[in-house]
Image (cartoon, rainbow, N blue to C red; front, side, top):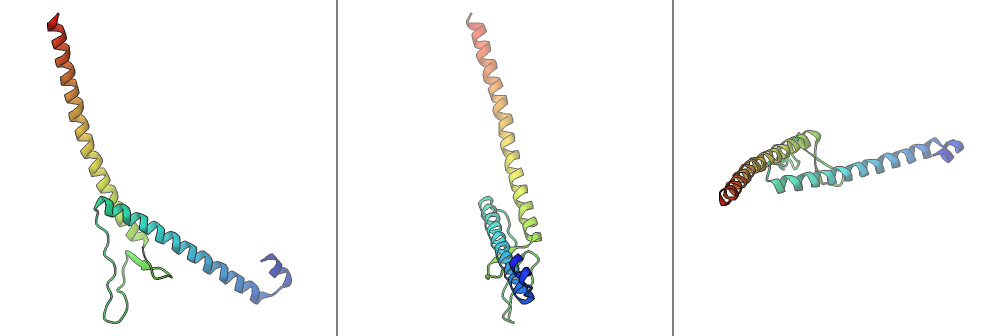
Length: 127
């Protein structure tokens, strides 16, 4: 860019800037596709609800969706709203699972206390 600026060729500078912005847009789209893929994989593993994909209508185009957008290479990515919805569902499911494990921990602790008490009493009465 500096060399082109020194030469003073405005058309070449604009061409390089357009190439740069196009490449960065493709990189960003690839990152969004990767993030969407990871988010969906986790959502499927946890069996949480995923927003429905846009349907193909009679006018040979897809319906508008606030949850999905089509990338430059044709892949479907979650929008910011779609990511927020899926993330919230994932958090709810993970919280529910943690609370379930916490309930088991309480019961196991109580059971351990009872077993310890019984062993202590048996040891006292054996003497």
